[in-house]
Length: 306
Image (tube, rainbow, N blue to C red):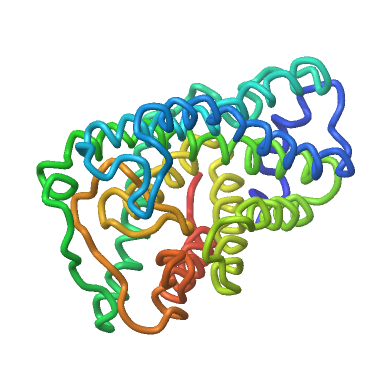
């Protein structure tokens, strides 16, 4: 497993004058994530002024899918966009290395992004397939203007926001935390710590369960291995993006315990035991996704490439 010990991500992390100590990496990852979330506050204030305080149906119960998709995308962009800025500043002034050394080299962008996008869609569709086979998913009645063809504009628009969100989490966790710790100490320490941080960062999400927390850590392991194997962030950023988008705006599930505005192509709902379906957290909180992630980890370990 030479790719594990000598991933290109580690080589890129060593391009600077110094590698951040693990005692600083851990708290800084939470600081960057927290203060980036503050970027969405102005957007939420404007939404409150326009639509009033959110009720059980959210801010915009009567809005079109396109309108809600615009605001959902804007929230995601402003809540996660500052992560890119914080990392740029840290690399520029402390580690003193170029931004692209986070695993964002220009080579093979389209191939890697397209492959990751396809793999992410297939993986989550497999989880839905498992739930369907055991009779744990069904169609839900909803607002006709928020689903199907009528929602297509909003569904496509919100993909932009998911792209910023998924990419931001990947540059922070798999582009910075994992390679810096892995290059300075041991690769397995970088993988373990980055996976735990990823899970903890989602620890305040509503309706979190023990299985959901395990699945978040498993996704961290899978994503870390995928990025290390590819030596780049483009693929895993696309996979993370489409995973959230397909989950919330294609199938209509909760995304890590939160609603995904912007409409949905299919409006599905889980039925049956929460330990399998994930309940209010969404499929990520159930064993169907656990199976998919374990299979993804195995497939990544067996992935044959030059």
